[in-house]
Every structure is written in structure tokens, then in C-alpha cells.
Image 1 (cartoon, rainbow, N blue to C red):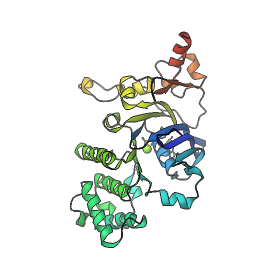
Image 2 (tube, protein in one colour; image 1 turned 135 degrees about the vertical axis):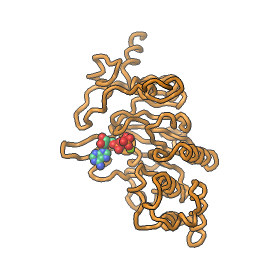
Image 3 (cartoon, rainbow, N blue to C red; image 1 turned 180 degrees about the vertical axis):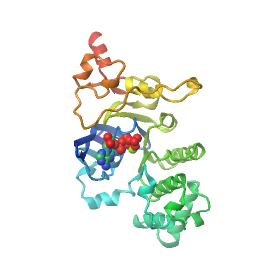
Image 4 (spheres, rainbow, N blue to C red; image 1 turned 90 degrees about the vertical axis):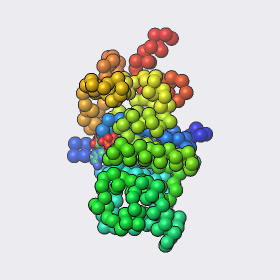
Length: 329
Ligand SMILES: Nc1ncnc2c1ncn2[C@@H]1O[C@H](COP(=O)(O)OP(=O)(O)OP(=O)(O)O)[C@@H](O)[C@H]1O
Ligand SMILES: [Mg+2]
């Protein structure tokens, strides 16, 4: 683990058992998250973002499981901790905002009860103090009239409100790391901007470390310090947000960026990354992006690309640059 890393993921594999065989959702991912950083995980639907995020908390639902790897946090491998230690850590040290709030909130308890429950469970406060803390959190997240809101059940809230309750629950025990899985996706742009501002404020003021999972590159540009681009359960490119956006190396990242709406694209049809993600249960030989890659060479279909480094922290797994290096010695 590098000195500055708060969380180090090493060669993580996650697999889902399906009737058609094992589906490798995460295929050997490694990354480091520094304290106080916003680390983005991006990629198209199905590339393994949620599986990676949930694995950090050992919350892969069956029929999925973490098959190998290490998740190093404060010098300990979370994958070898007993479940009781993991339970104490979840929410308190590392908290998750789930992609689907309706499934993650308990339908039979009021919002207030669920929020105070988290605050109480982690020994932050109890009784009236817990209630006041819950109200303060709700207010901080822009949920109107917290006293009334606290009496409501999840199904009585809009998707955006549910998402904000999820964020309040994640922040309730003042964790060191938040894994936010599409935490702003269901929100309208004004609320989304407020949540982004809040997360950035928490990062500044509390030194909160955020793992920000999204398919929205615009948001990545706004909020992330560095970013890992996933394709079919692997990182294909990673680096500081600036280098990823302005010195893009991998054809997949280039495709994602070209598909982003922006000033230059106004009035023109958006380009998309051509083709679709192939069936993940099939064995992959060579680079997994090769079948869709506009720059694919014969070698791409047979040999797994090795990492090529471009300046501090910027790495791409792509034969284009390997070949260039070979040509220029
Ligand atoms: N419960 C499950 N059973 C079987 N396969 C699953 C299950 N959950 C996820 N997968 C598969 O694992 C792979 C990764 O899924 P994951 O949810 O991590 O993708 P994602 O990048 O978060 O996508 P999205 O942007 O749609 O949220 C996909 O191929 C998906 O079909
Ligand atoms: Mg997901």
C-alpha cells in the first residue's frame, strides 16, 4: 500500500453464479484512494461499478461473491475480518449510499426512526440528542421541514428525497469514507448541484474521502480528483481527472468523452461508443474492448494489454502505446 493511500484495493475479483455459468463482474481491479480525495469510478452500465463499490463493504448479494483480492484499510485486509468486525465498521468508518434507495430503505419504519437508528447504533447519540442530530442532517441535505419529514415512510417520499435520506444515513455516523453509488442520479439538476456542493464541503471541512460511482462524466469533471475508467470488470485507464479529460489515452475513455454532451455538441447528434458490452459470461481473450475499438490491431484480440504509464498516476491498459514504445525503443 502506498504511504498516502487510505484504502488500497488489490486484484479484486467478484463473480456471480448464473444458470449460464460464472459471470466475472469484477476481474482483477486494483486502485488506491488517498485520504480526503474524491475518487471516481466510471463506465457504462454493467461494467462492474456497483459490484466494486459493494465489495468494499463486503455487501455483494448472493449469488455473487468476492472470489479473491485484498481491500486494505488502516493496514487491515477487510476481506479477512470476521463479519462482526465488518458490521461495526460498516456505516461507522465506511458508509455506502446505495444506487437503489427504495430497496435500501426499510419500508416499515419512518425516515426519522431509520436515521436515529443509525445514529444510536453507532453510539453517536441517543434519545433527544439523536433526534436533533437527525433533524440537523436532514436540514443539511435540503430535506424540508425535518420534524414532519421524520414522520414519513420511505414510499411517501419522492425518489430525490429518498436519495437525500440515504445520504443523510450514510453521513449520520460521521464515517471516514463514503462510497456513493450513483448518489445524485435520480435528482433534478438543482438538487444534484446542491448535493455535489455538500459533498465537496464535507470533503473540505471534515476531510471526508469519497468514492464516487457514476456513469456521468460531467459530474466526474466537477467533483473527482482522480478517476478509474472501468470496462467489463477491469480498469482500462486511470489517473488524475485533468489528465483523463485532457490527455485521454484509452480509445474507450475517448469514446465515453465523445459521447458527453457539451458546448461543441449543441444541436448535433451525440456520438456514442459503438456496439454494446458483450456477454460477460464468455471467456475474453486479449483486450476486452477490442471488439468495439476503432483502433484495434490484431494483437489486441489475443494478448492482454500491459499497463502503460504516462506521467504521475496516469496509466492506460492499451496496446496502442505498447506498440509505440516498442517502435521508439
Ligand atoms: N445479482 C446479480 N446476479 C447476476 N449477475 C449480476 C448481479 N448483479 C450484477 N450482476 C452482473 O454483474 C455485472 C456488473 O454489474 P454492476 O451492477 O456492478 O454494474 P454497474 O457498472 O454498476 O452498472 P449500472 O451503471 O447499470 O449500475 C453485470 O454484468 C451484471 O449483469
Ligand atoms: Mg450500478
